[in-house]
Amino acid sequence: MRQISLLIIISILTIVAPAYSLSADDWIIKESQSRVSFITIEQDDIAEVHTFKKIAGSVNDKGTANLSIDLDSVETNIDIRNERMRKFLFETVSNSSVAISTDLNIETFNSLNAGERILLEDLTFEISLHGISAELSSNMYVTRINADKVLVETAAPVLVHADDFNLGKGILKLRELAGLDSITPVVPVSASLLFTK
Image 1 (tube, one colour):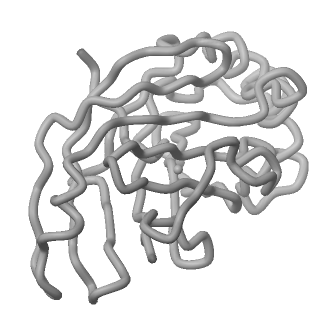
Image 2: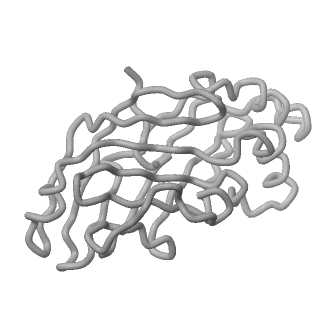
């Protein structure tokens, strides 16, 4: 089973509120202090870092985690490339977001003391991307910042294979439009998600 970040990660529909209901006991992603990034490699050796501006999600008092990444919020620092990724790679008209869900032992969050950090190994989750759903796994660090803040991060960049989510055709189109000989179809993804109460 290929590993994929919890956050491609990991964790939105153009900042539309998540479909799940929230309560005072839920842990909520603080978008302004969270980040999901990925690296593309062109022409064999030109690497660039990109991000998503809009992520949302929560972990409820039963440990059910739901996250979403707004694919229209992709930021490559080049406007025309943003547009091309939305239109030809992610096809956001019909595939606007990445949805991720998993079940956690909520005590993982609640029992940590401030400053404590643990590793969740082989965390299994369901991810829906570009019309394809799959059960995947990843290693994640959980760090208790204080009573009301927990940081969840990928243990290492996770390799995402474009063909696993039917994105290969879109990559070929991006190559054609940019006049490139190659765009690597395997993408390292990292996530750092701050949850607050």
